[in-house]
Structure formats: structure tokens, C-alpha cells
Length: 215
Figure 1 (cartoon, rainbow, N blue to C red):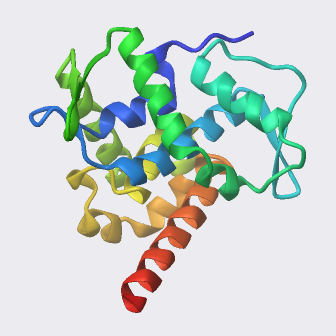
Figure 2 (tube, rainbow, N blue to C red):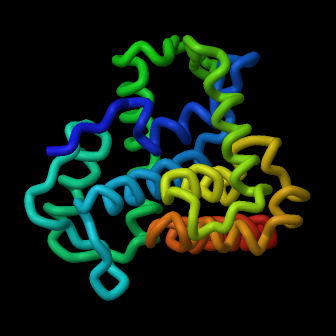
């Protein structure tokens, strides 16, 4: 069993990237859920726990990672009565997975969480430099000149998932537009979960637009 350190986990890194240090909160709830679900699938794929089976996710053997977030998601996939497509797993259990990542980070002492009545919970990152460093890494990866094929899949996933889910202002429309070809390359480099996240986010946008038009 390959153990995953909390700070090595892609879902955890995406969560921390989205933390607003000064306001001590997360503001990207639903969008972050999509990114973290995709990050969970990407991590599981990279560790050989799941694989693509004609466009659907299939659990491989009895692999475990030692990370409760990853292993929880893997167990649900393995026990599901029928295989589902990647973007479907990106869309499912977003809130539960976000809360599991939050709990994992809190248990490890990386963040402190304070629930507040009628207000957003307060999330304090112990090392206040971490979210900014992760955002800077994502921006540097997206705007850099290193060929996408040479970039580690986890780095490609951090940058492309954060951009696709719009998790921080540093990856705003202008940056995404100016680097749209590279974003597509990094999304593909992230593994099957990358295009699946793009498809899920496109479906979300279409549903929101339809709702706005109908309202």
C-alpha cells in the first residue's frame, strides 16, 4: 500500500489553493467540489488504483493508498453495481469529498476550522504562505514555456483543475484565454480526469445558463 502524505495529495493541494488567507474562508464551494473530485480521480489513476475501461472508471484489484479521502472514494467506485463514466464520478459526492478533505487537513493540523452560526465557517491555514505558493505554482505552470509533455501530471492537474474550476483570481479569464491552448494540453496531461472535469464544468455552465434564461 502506497501511503499519501496530506500535503502530497492533489485534492488537499487544490483545497489549500482555494483558501482565502485574509478572509479565512473558502468562497469557491461548488466549483471547488468539482476540482477536488477530479483531483481525487487523477490521484487514484496515477497510483494505479483505477483505470479507464472504454470511457468508464474501473477499480483495479484491492489497491489502497492510506489516505482516507482517496480510499473512501475508491471504495465507493469499487462497490458501485455498475461502471460509470469519468465525468459522472466528477459530479458525484462533491460536498462529501470536500468535507472529507477539510477534515483530513484539520486532523493533520494544516488548517483550523471554526463553525459559526448563520455564517460561513472560518478556515485558518496554519502556514499562511501555502495558498499563495500553490497559486503561484499553478500560474507559473499555465503561463510557462516548458513543454506540457515534460510536466509532472500532478503539476499539470493542479494548474489546469484550478483554472477550469476558476479557483482563484490569479487564474482569471484573461490568463485562461491567453493560455487556452496550453490549458488544453495541461488538462490532457493530467490524465483521464482532466477532460472529465472540463466536460463536467461545461455541463454545469450550460445548466446554470439554462436556469438563468428560464428564470
